[in-house]
Image 1: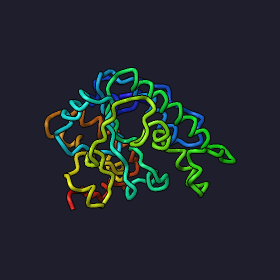
Image 2: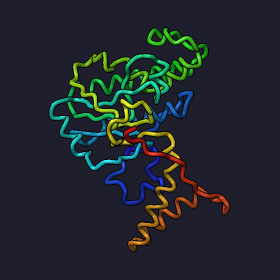
Image 3: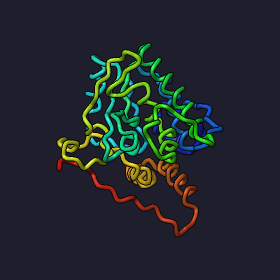
Image 4: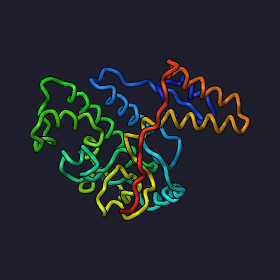
Length: 258
């Protein structure tokens, strides 16, 4: 776990093998952009030869994850392409691009050069996005609305497409494009629902975090892990101090074959 909150209550549980403190990014015009840059800075710090990064608003619905790592026998990076009906950036950018929420990669010089470039281009774009007036960015000259251009500049998928896309590869990496089921973000198009979802990617999952923690705390309590369960209950109580405040899971459907 890489975090700028190493003393957070959840870091004191046994959910993580190791906690690595990072210095959080500050000074950008968007907290969301700062979080994206924090994440990109962590990717090259992986201790593993083969790594799968998933956004936090994902849920793994398959037991086939070990198979993914075997793909790296024959490629440097595995990514999933975005689709217009389930991606703001893909819809408004108008060209093929990869999702930044699923990144399968192995350790080598080409990949590390790409990750460093992705971080640098992202930080540049984030700073441009916070400027007034908004600078002219050739990559987005085809996007008419300034509000849309600014929002696209705040997305690390936009900086990714500048250096790596299904149509462009500046670093000579061997890239494998995986089926959409590995990063299903809600498309209802039949061609994107021919296979059961392996990994679900949805903003609605962000509101499921606390109900998930509550369910885990209850399971721990039932299995006799009382002290650990109490840690989670205490954490949730600190997040919901008002007696009448409830934790309500968001309504969420699981896509599958249409």
